[in-house]
Image (cartoon, rainbow, N blue to C red; front, top):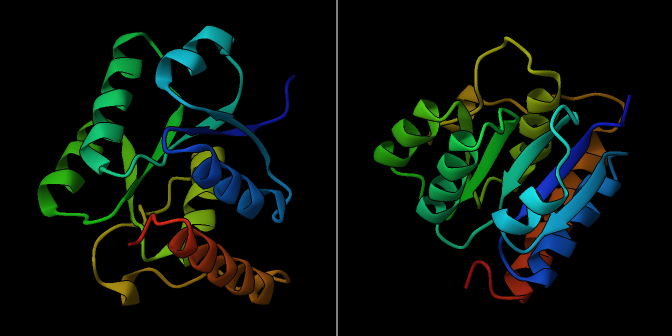
Length: 161
């Protein structure tokens, strides 16, 4: 069976590289694609993994996810949002996806790891950070450090500008 991978879709190459760096530091395999069409051209149904949409606008990521769902792609999905509104959370939930605030990068890796395992535990969502404690394991310090580094890198390339 193929190794689980995080399929990073959208954004520019520097953004996809920054997210790939984050997941590589956690031992997760990544593959990046400029568009959903590029992903579909290489995706083999049944390949385990998680979709990660890093579009600048969450609504675009959700629209792309909806199109992939219509084509039968049932992988778990995480959408990074600059401004996660209640309407976007509802749209993500209707597509069985998790919406993550772009400024809460520290919660991205746990959300992706949860999506990869399809854990039945509650989704990580909402503006209340107290509802989403960072899972502290032997890599906890590294998660926070890598997340801060990623936030700095993404801010540098203009994602948060």
